Image 1: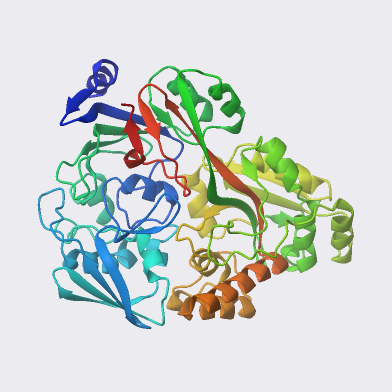
Image 2: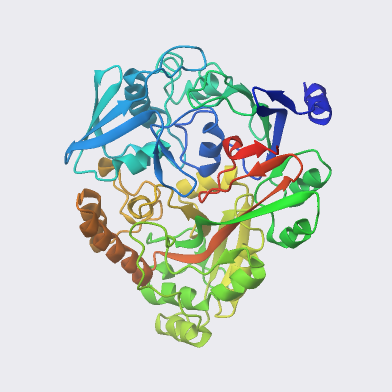
Length: 525
C-alpha cells in the first residue's frame, strides 16, 4: 500500500474533468494527530481536525469562526429553553443511508457514554432532551436559557445511528470507529485506514452534499518532530505542513518552490495553577514538603505573573510568531474585555510579593506541558523567567498521550497548555476552565485543579442564561476581568499559525482555529 501511494504521489498528473482540476493525492504532514476516530471521544483540536473530514457538524464554523449552515440549514429559539433545527434534505451517509433527525438525537445522547479525556460533553452540556419532530426537524430542550447553543453545536459531530448503534459504550466505541466499522459520516471524505500515530488515509466521497472535493485521496501524516516535517516538505514527500516552527519561517519564505501562509489564531498559551490544599509537585527549595500549597496565595500568583516578560517570549522564544495577550481570549471573541492591558513585567515587585507571602527564597515546582503540542522553546523560557524571582521550575515536557491523562488525574501542580475559544464566545472558555467543577451542572469540565470562586461562578452562569446579547457581553467582560485579577491562569502568548505548501501544487486558505483541512486546500490551476 505504501509503495502504491508513493508511486501515485510521484507519478500522477493533474486530471481535468468537467472544467475542474483533480489531483490524485493530497499529502499533509501535521504536528498532532487524532487519539481516536470516534468524533465524540475527546474535545481536543487534533481529534476534531481529523474527524471533520469524515463527519459533518450540525452547524459549521467558518474560517473566521462565523456560524454557517451545515447539516442544519436553519435554527431558531422558540423560547428561552427550546431550540428548533431544520435539517438539510437529501443528505447521504457514506454507506448511502439517509441522514435524518434520528441521527442528530442519537449523536447528542451518545456523547456522555463514550467521551474520554478532555470530554466532548462541553458541547452538549446545555441539552436536557432531544425531540424528533419529523425526519428533518429536531427540537432541543435545554436545562436553562441557552442563547449560545448554536455556538456549541459547531462541534456536534453527527454519526450514523445505524452504523454506530453497536459501538456506543466506552468498551465498544474504539473497536467500532478505529477499524472503520462505525466510521460512517456525511462528510466530504470517507475513512480508509488509521492507527494511533500513523497515517490517516481518506478517499473522496462523491455523494457529498456540499459538492465533490478536488482530491481523490488525502493522506494525513502525523509527524510531531518539527525538523522532520520541514525535511519531508523540502524533499517533496508531502505537499503541506502545519505548525511551521518559528525558526524555519524566514528560511522557507526564501524557498522559491514553497509558499508560507501565516495567520493569527485564537489559541493562547497559558499557565495554570493548582488550587488544592495539598499539591503533588511543589516543594521547599531543599525538596522537603511545604505546610501548604503556596499557589493558593494570590500574592504568589501575582508574583508569577509579574515575573513573565511576554514581550521577550513573543520576540525571542517564539521568534515573532506570536502576539502579547491581555486575557485568555482574543479580540475577535464575544466577551473580550477591551479595558484590560497586558500584564506588567516587574521583577522587583514580584520578589516583594513572594517575601510578603512568606517565600523570600522562593520554592521548587515542576512545570509540566505537552512537548508535542506546545512550542518547544516556551517551557524552558518560562522556567528561566521564574528563576529570576527564586522559583526553581523543573521542566517536564511529555507527549500529549501522557500529559492529558495525567493532568486529568490531578498529577500536576503547575502546567502549561493552550486554549482556543472555538465557538467565538467567551463563555466556552470560562465555563470550561474557570467555573467550579460541577458535573451535575455540566460546568468546569476542564477545571481539574480545584479552582473555585463563587463570584466567578455566578458571572458565568448568569452570562450563560442571558438571552440579551448586550447583557451577556457585559457579564462575560466582567468574568474575563476577574480572571485577570484573581489569576487562576496566566496568559502567555497568542499563537500565530504558519503553514508551508508546495507552490506549484496547492493553495491553502488559513483558519483562525488553526485547523488544517483538505477542504481548505485546492490544487493550483
